[in-house]
Each structure stands twice: as structure tokens, then as C-alpha cells.
Image (cartoon, rainbow, N blue to C red; front, side, top):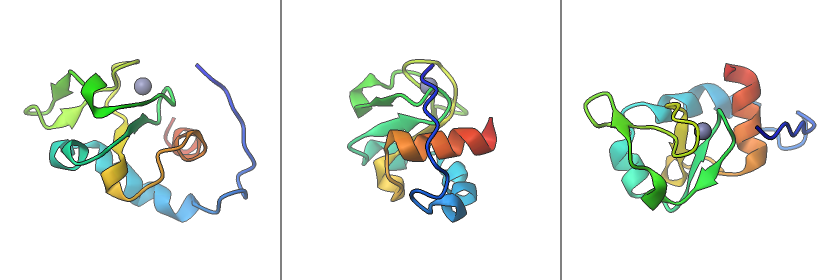
Length: 93
Ligand SMILES: [Zn+2]
């Protein structure tokens, strides 16, 4: 796991974390229209074709790298960057 600690004041995205978390469940339609996915557990960023496992009635993506259902797609409107995923990680794990 990459442990990159960035200054929390850097991007000012803290207020988006709670809402962003709701995008990682029952997100298949949203993920389908995303060009990129990010996992905020292991901080992996990968293309849609890498997601092969789904849970929750085939509606919730599992990370292609770590298998945790902490995947968010770019169609959510959130930036799929290591910086953003790290912020989510710090908050939820
Ligand atoms: Zn992962």
C-alpha cells in the first residue's frame, strides 16, 4: 500500500467526503459511464475494464486490486486522483 501523506489543506475537498462515500455502493450505472475508477482503500486508479467483480446484486464494484468495495468512478463528479483517494482513505479507514 502506498502511504502518501499530503497536506490536508492542500485541495480543500474535505466537505465532499461524506457525499462521495455514498457513490461506492450500488454504483454500477455510475461506474459504467466513468472513464476511470479509483479505490480509496488501496488508492489504486484503474480503467473500467479492470473491474470484474460485483457484489450487492451485481451493483457494487469491488476493487480490481484489493477486492474491497471502496470504488468510486469519475462520473460521480469527484476527482479520481491519488490525493482525493487518500483523503477518503484517511477519513473512512
Ligand atoms: Zn483497492
